Length: 68
Image (cartoon, rainbow, N blue to C red):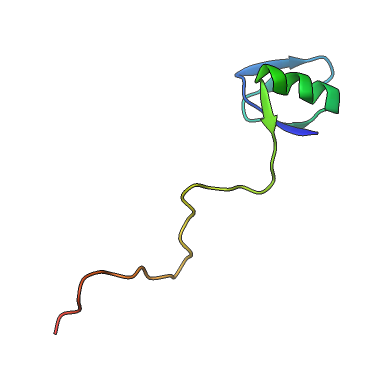
């Protein structure tokens, strides 16, 4: 189960020291243990942003009338 580390550092018996932002593949039982403690979050490959970037080359509609 892929997870992303949320703590500043996290020590694992097999992988050693894990740092904030590291993405690691843990056995399911160990990942669930760290999830319950709040040390990690599930790693999702699809990023969903609240404010998505505008597509390149797309001109935004203006509410101003063109000059005559």
